[in-house]
Structures are given as C-alpha cells and as structure tokens.
Length: 264
Image 1 (tube, rainbow, N blue to C red):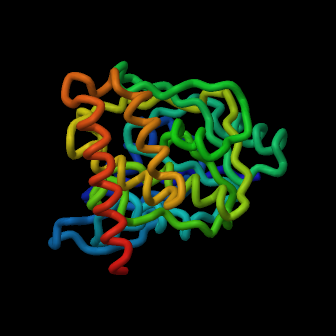
Image 2 (image 1 turned 90 degrees about the vertical axis):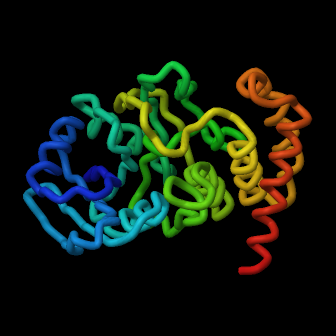
C-alpha cells in the first residue's frame, strides 16, 4: 500500500524551491504538486523529480486544484494537503495501519493540530463519520483511496465565489454515493492555519457563504442546518451579529445559491 501527498500551491516558478518546500513540510514519500498559475508570463509545465511530480496549470480555485490532484493520483492512498502543514515522522505508517484496521474505509480523516487557537481543529474519538460529523472535518485531515470518483464542487473553496465549505460538501457527497468514511484519532501533522483565504470573522459575508454550503449539502435539511448553526455557534459571532441577523444572512446565502443552481 503506497501513500501520496496531494499538495495545492500557487504561482511557484522554481522547481528546486518546490522540492525544498516539500522538505520543510517533512514529506518523506511520494508527492503530487498542483501549481496553479495566475501570471501569464509563467508557462504550463509537467515535471518529475524523483518522488515529486509537479503539474503547473494556468487556472485558479482550490477545488479545481483538488480535482486535478485526484485525477493525477497514482498511489493507493492520497493525502489532501495544504501548504502550511508539517507532517509527523511516521505519517505514512499511521495512515497505512488505519486502512488495514478499517478495510471497508474509502476515506479516513486523521487528527491534525492547529497552530492558531482562534481556528481550532477538533480532536475526536475514533468513529464512523456520518452526515453531521462531516462538518467537523477540515481538508488537511482527509485521506482517501484511489478511485473515489467524487469531484469537489468548484463553486466552493478558496478562489471561488463561495470561499469555504468544499471539503464538507465533498464528504457529504461521498456519503451520499455510499462511500465509507472514518475518523481515526491519530495525529499525522500540524497546521499553522494563519493565512488561509477561506477564514474571516463570522460576519454577514461569512454567514451567506455558510448558508450556501448548507443548501448545497441538503436541499431537504438546509433550513434545519441553518437554525442549529445559528444557535450552536452564537458565541462565535455575537460580536458581529445577533442570532436573528445570522439566520437572515444564512437564509440569504441559501436562497442566492438556490437561484444560481436553478440557472445551471
């Protein structure tokens, strides 16, 4: 069983710098780098250097990058990675062992520590993931078997109209198509979580994006998801919004996405 890191970066022009970057992340095995380019002076390239494959494309959008990475995955197991993650020394062995212990798993999420106390990643007991618990998982925690054949929704994620929620939508879509998902309480890395573009204070725009995520996840249950979120998370947004304002903007976001989806 082979493990491969799937790393998304932007506007990197030097192959040696990319190789050094993977060393700083303490990646010891295979890695596929999707390098999105917004500078027209940089050429699209495909390069391979030992265990590192680098695909540079003129494009943007984190979900697009994730989808390309899934398509390029060659190993048995892929690890979705952000550029601020540092892996533990034996991350490959931890991941392999988890899949051996859960042979029916299509996807396993692991513990990744957050270096930003304002953006914690919840450490959980080992369990089988259901629809609600997908909302507690972030992208850098996700590993998956090759051949999942479920794409990330490209309207969501950094660089898209709705700047977060793509991993939660993807996990929900995987469950909906019969995939088995587990959370295993073992640490595979640490994340700084300081400069990710999806994060902002929980204000009007944040709530509208969250409402769109809820509608995309479930046209049947999005109203309930909105209400529970507004109540459960009120301490996190109370400095910016009242509960009624939060519900209002969550609802607006859901309606806006619904209107957009109907045009497609």
